[in-house]
Image 1 (spheres, helix red, strand yellow):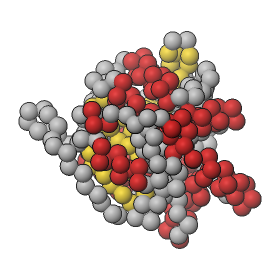
Image 2 (cartoon, rainbow, N blue to C red):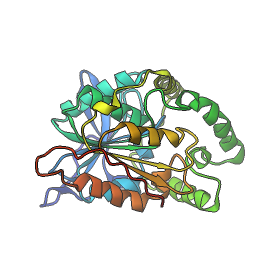
Image 3 (cartoon, rainbow, N blue to C red):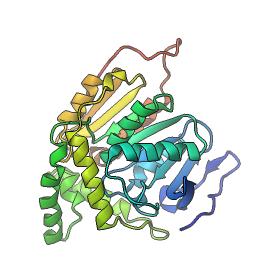
Image 4 (tube, one colour):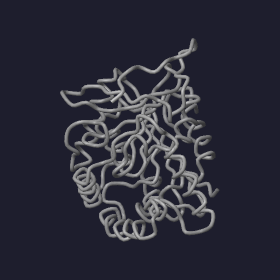
Length: 309
């Protein structure tokens, strides 16, 4: 694993793209956690939490680079995944505690979170466990504890993974995107972007880690609903209008239950809607992260909007 620090220019920015960002590691209570960091060194850092079975090379570099133009961005590997040590947890609770400990080990007292799919489950739990730690929250392709269809994700996923094997295509073609012409074109572009990094690539998940994360996802889907109405920070929620992995109705449910939330639904898009509409998503996310609260510093009354792209 590469552990050298990235070079910064005189403005304090990490002057490299995500596909060239070195993999680094930090010890958290005896376990090494892998991460990559880029963007300005000032301001509140944005922590990226990724999907089931994802490693550092599964973060969309087009989105990471877009966000890193304005924000310090840190992508991580969960415990037991990719280049991180330890054994993958089987609960979202344990994963959230790991990320909280990692954030503290990195020296941060306030962060923004962007969670995609499984990462969105973890991000919600972090906010509820440590509300003072998170400034703003972005939830994409995800849903609440006990959400519709989440406990059945394996029943949806396994047949499409097998289809990927028989058609010699990455299963994310079918899992993340619609079958329309635009969906297939977006899938090819996304998967090509994930291959752009040639050196210092992360290790893929082991079958055991993959299955342990699935156990955590299914338990989240059976879990009792959480008190999402207690979240009092700005929240951006985004998804495609045809998410088959974490059904889109879960995004609407999040928006109904979270006090200060903004909902964006992308047309003719699936679980990977933010990848299909990566340019629009980056602009929306940057505007959200840079928006000011009112002069009293309090959160405005609940206002949920839906944009069909």
